[in-house]
Image (cartoon, rainbow, N blue to C red; front, side, top):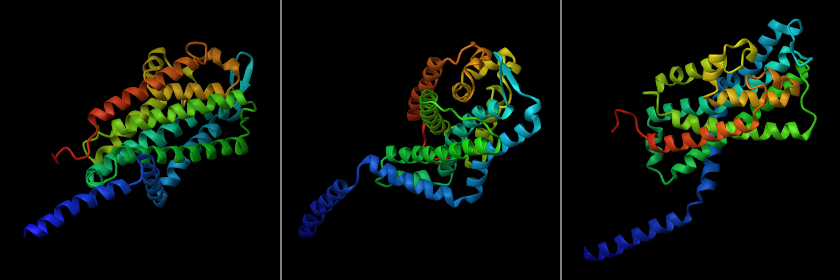
Length: 291
């Protein structure tokens, strides 16, 4: 028995150490996990179709209802309702593909035991979250590209033709996507179960769409509503996107009569940092009733 113990104990330890050394790095595992997440996502065809179609359908509905008979005018410049409405839909698409998707999917995975099982594997927690962020980034890129193509081809919305506006689009898009994804991870601990996740996540996001200048021009919203929405990322992503797709004259109709790029970056960065801290402290791998 002593011989068996002497051969199995150290050998088993050496085998575990060898296995640990052979595991790929955290980033590589995160990319692999992201591929798995993406594969699972595309297999849910109804979710893919409705998720990608929502911003396009809303753009089509609002543009058809208001049409060219209700142009938006500011500083002597006139744009169609479709052009004015596009930035809000881009912002909404970012939040849907990051905050909403991650908050609901993680809550469901916690409820059905997926997170508990993953926690028992060698997969680092960081790699799991990187996989989720990778999924969000890929889906929001595809969704935004499709939305812009439909807006330009079907509704004759002019897209920026200079590098400066596209540079603004890039940093607002990246910072908004990062903030939305991290907020989604942090908020995923709020729903008490997977069944309640949709209602708990979708309801506040839908309300923010009405108060953040997504569905209506900011000039039609009361001041207290704009002040309230300015506490959340969606308003700033929408405002940043308006600075990309609307003439500069439209900055005069914003609440501060300016695009406020500095404030946009500061608010989104603040949400990113706060959500990271809150998520790290509150994230749960098990259900409330599972210890």
